[in-house]
Length: 71
Image (cartoon, rainbow, N blue to C red; front, top):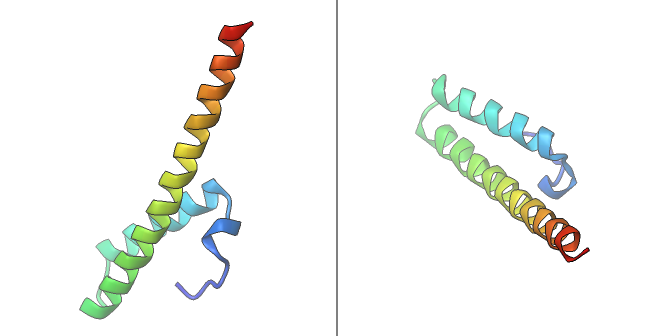
């Protein structure tokens, strides 16, 4: 991917869109092994960022739930 925007600056939705795009390009790849490996590596980085954000959201939900139960 030629986009230079750091993953941390993208919205979750933009990350998911990028991940879908990378998966699609891997499925249709005709550019060779090296390109496929680069796309796979990029996809794994995007997936890791998505997971990090989901875990953070889960922690936030748990905090909200605990706060509501304490009332």
